[in-house]
Length: 218
Image 1 (cartoon, one colour):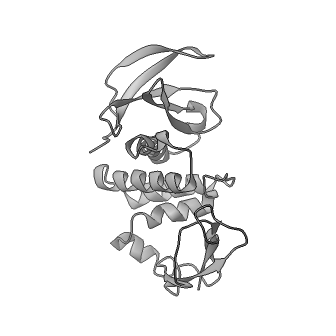
Image 2 (cartoon, rainbow, N blue to C red):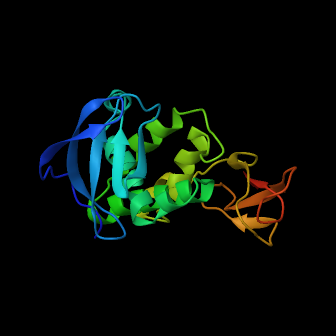
């Protein structure tokens, strides 16, 4: 187990550039090397939270103002998402869409297995994330990311009941992106009414080869 319900073990104060002294807590995240990951309040970051190495020590910096606008399950999700970057060693590499999606999956699966994520909490997380309309080259737009997170969990009786109607033909599941090689033009997709989605090739080229594509309900 890499994370548990937030438990404040102790509080220390360390120097932080441009911020004098910053309060640091240890809230249950353990990185891939077995080190406890420090959580640091930082009102200067223009994001919910960020994971990085500082002097080779793993830290998660978070903006309390941004977090205060989200539900409690979403705040936990973003903390565990940043923890995932340390567990999966993403902080040792350049940011990428693949790493962000992997961290989302690790976070929501951890919440399901270790924190008994309820369907109500999942929907609260999705609703908060769906409000984040903007995206950059490492993140899906909010609505697509919200759908993508649920796909990490696979099928459960509760989500099966909700998905019985599914999205209609033409509903976008994924925007154009480099999603990896997939040889079929049609793929199973439980989020669609038909049970299948079609892959539409998009303009451009992917760094690893091939073309970007979008996924649309059949």
